Image 1 (cartoon, rainbow, N blue to C red):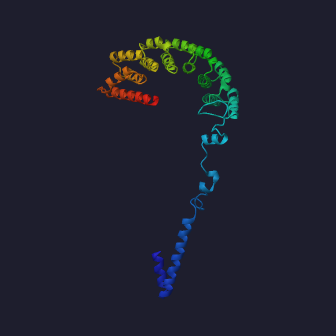
Image 2 (image 1 turned 90 degrees about the horizontal axis):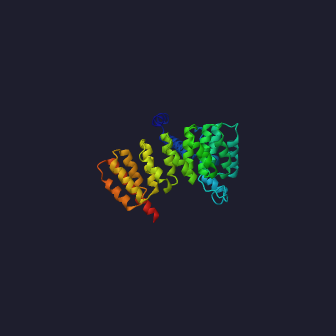
Image 3 (image 1 turned 180 degrees about the vertical axis):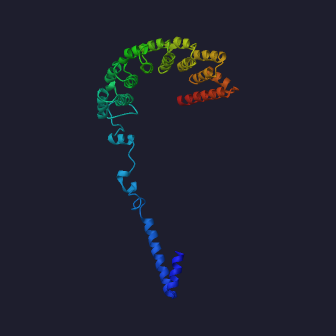
Length: 321
């Protein structure tokens, strides 16, 4: 701009004309700058045709799933009145569509597995018959049977207990299907489920033993104590740890004494940490005293886990008030 003014001054020698020329040029520059400031961002031709969301409703952020559900129903759920309480709620039409996919043998196994998973998470009782049919059929894809078996546990359909019990106890069944069956039985929490899980706690496969004990944690019951205590001497440390956590879920004074004995006798930090974690589930003064004993332990890992367990007990106590 300075160079332009100098050239202009060389041509226009009269002071008045020079002043007018400079003033005119400044007006043009000011007009251009003002125009750029007023123009909306994204609406210029050189901005790839983008438009601000404030001026284009179709570019505004999409409503969340919760907002869409609230808009469909005064109660905030698209399925008000159906008695379903789930974070994965869906409309009746969505449920019917997923059921069709689940039962369609011409559909891809992966798509049917997704349908089974979604129906289970939404706790759709209407899907129980279809889930039972899928799990019973050994010709179905493994991934589909996994999802359907899991869903039966979530749905808590007691009709599934004999089927899941048979799969869990079968040495020839798919290993992962046995694992899923164990966890589903733990969710069901019936006496027949406990019988099957107690038997599985002695299975030759250490993974099945581990998962059976883990499943017993889902519905703590003192009738399982003998089985769980027997597993404390299992040769697999993961099975031992699972048994310790299961005892902790029982949450009684007798368990504190058992855990104290293990802490004194074992040399494994892994097992000691399992004991400290389990103590954090037992709201008894004996449990607090034992954890405080390890709170200042020279082993920082044990000390940290003891403090964490104490905080959990304190938090539980505050929540109960």
